[in-house]
Image 1 (cartoon, rainbow, N blue to C red):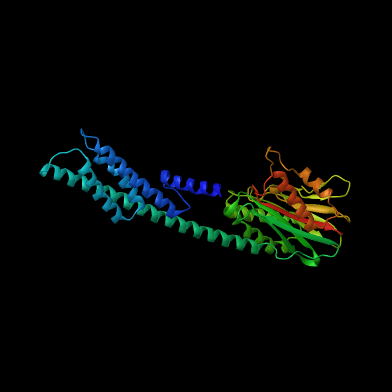
Image 2: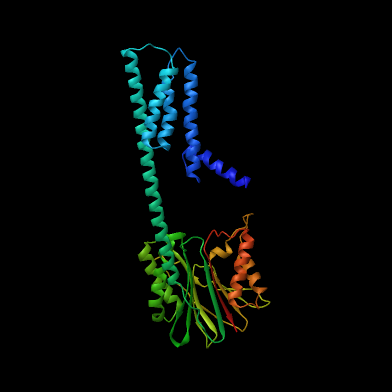
Length: 377
């Protein structure tokens, strides 16, 4: 309770000193009104004991603060009050045209300051409301972009006899720059895709639909994975003019032959984990997509054995850092998977995610974290 009260008063103090955001509007107005009254009283008290010069200009300070807080008519009324106090408490100067002229000029000065500050305050309020509206509109648009992005991701996981799949993306921001997908091909083959667009947020997320559309259209037309990515590389380069790039892994699973043909375009090499053996990185391919027009790509193939676990991931996993600046690393990822081979792909993803969060010491992600896990049954 005491902490809450202290927090409220600190917010009020911040409003008084900076005119910035505050929590309790009414309490702030009350405190600022007391400051205005106290300021007028302090100047009047000093005016009472000063006979050598006039303190009338000092009333401008509480009047200006009043103009920021109160309605214009209240501040104008206070201007008359301040002039009256100065007339009663200030240095005696007799009654004549000269004094009336000075007091009229003083009142006009008060009114000018009050009106000017009041208008500035009103303009500031209008700008704050406009900024708030623009922020809300932008937030709504970003949320809509996130919903569109989520609709691009697979809504269901393929069901293939002898294999089990799972996938999950944990965005660092509302809109992510990662992508994963499954492409159903002829003769029961399945295309596995995981990608990471350079950068984060909306700018990176805008390229995701390009990945989806290009792969859906081109994957059935190219029998070899390297030919597909060679063509896709040129498409990305034309779209981005080489200013952005995409790291991408594309694998074609042939369930009947229990093998995976793949091409790695500059992506973190997926790992094939086999019980009691060193992990096998799938690193054959070429450069990231979109940088070098006409770049060449290789393909490779690996035979999958019963119990094998294939882990596809983005750099948000292995480059996650702990408070000491150490990276999670592919070695730690392989160790976690190897010690939980009995789990299903979905359980493995949760285990890896929990491990990364515990390693970082916070649930806030610095980069998008995406995982695709395939297990051979």
